[in-house]
Length: 129
Length: 129
Image 1: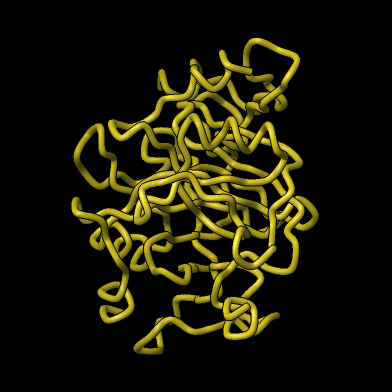
Image 2: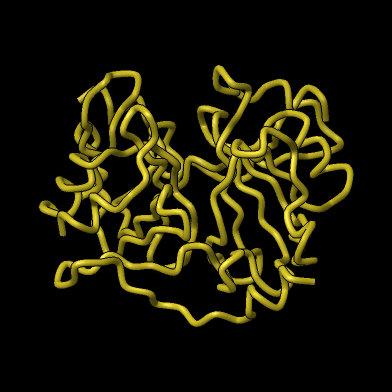
């Protein structure tokens, strides 16, 4: 385990981007950052942990909402500088209530990105608990 | 178009990560970096262009190999700081001959990541042309 995590090419801040993908249908749920310690926690607990750059700490995905991401598979790429975690997503990944954070599509005929998904929970209810 | 690209939250180097995903089956093909100009070129030409950090320039994906990525859809996320481009991939995305760059899986029982894919072309032949 250690050797595999050591073999990744972390950037100067010790981070690699991580794509979280729905194991069941291939939908990309979010893109975040992780580091060696967050990957270790992810593997140990079976729940996705990321490194929050804004909070400068490791964060358990779903710690406020209970919308955990249960790890099924971890992949890396040819350069070993990016990671995919395939997961079973509980409820939804996005703090705005959408299943996936990628709910906006580029539309050449519009002035703003078009929302193409429907929220599956109400953030006001979930995060006010 | 311009306003949508302007609305992205590029990092201090003017970049956002871009995940390239197979439109037909959801397979993640690669993770790269892009900027406003590379996104414009991607939209104008219908072929994925990225910003190569190592070469410090915009690069047409497939310029050496002919393995272009034909754009089907572009998505962004809640924070507008990451992009997905869904594509039709010609031949393969990875310069090592694999369909996807993500051909290695974490294996708790092994000392190194396990190769889980089979190459679909021979890099020596394609890149020596």
